[in-house]
Length: 83
Image (cartoon, rainbow, N blue to C red; front, side, top):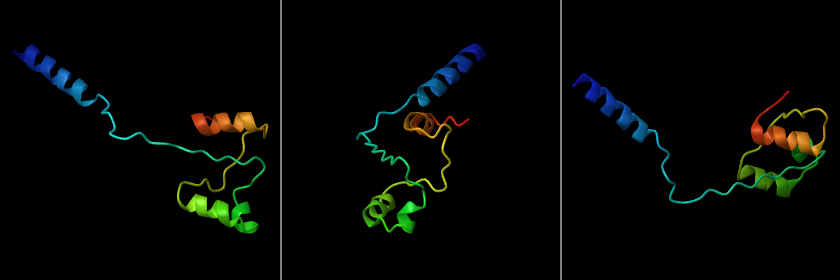
């Protein structure tokens, strides 16, 4: 009886941990500007980019991965790996 209760508990926990299917897909648009510091939007009055940033998420005071090339920095943004 005790083993049966344990097995049922495990099965219920596993079923509860299954991912649920979302009713709508989410679309993510990542805008990356090479050589564009985090504070250039305000410093140079880039109003269109500021409007886009207000509607989404914006990184403040981001630090580049060295070497400061496009590929290593994009890999760092996508994976979260920073060295």
